[in-house]
Image (tube, helix red, strand yellow):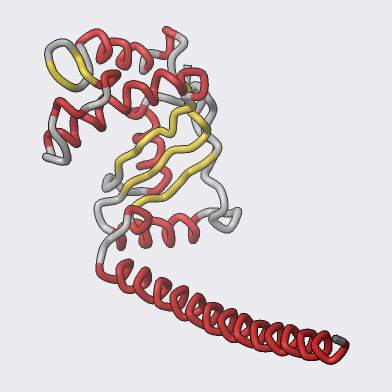
Length: 198
């Protein structure tokens, strides 16, 4: 009986050693494949970035605007003077936290309508919350509601402190940045103070 116990113990230890070796080998192979996949993904992303223009190549995030700075015309005029160019447009980053649920609800309707128009799926498959009695998308009342958010007097949306400056070409962005940095006494780290908007 003692000899059988020794043989059983030896067999279990031998199996455990083989299993540990196989698991270690699988771990090494899996780790190697993971690293190879990560390197490939990095290369693919870099190739995609070289072949396809990205918004970051045309836009600049300017920070430090007060919450009441929502007039795009005045902001555009200010930034065109600051950058000494007429070749730019602006997009205000609005703080919509107090309307988050409503914004997401309306955005869902807009996206469903776009998906149906693109043929992604049939109108009958659209979520009930995105459907209207007379079709998909936003109703006239919802469109009016959104426009009311853009009026400062109504307590609507406020500036989140950021404005995106969009240039027509990436070389416009680079030349404006170089011109601005060369003329800015702070080394190009800040624009002059934004005008106080009523």
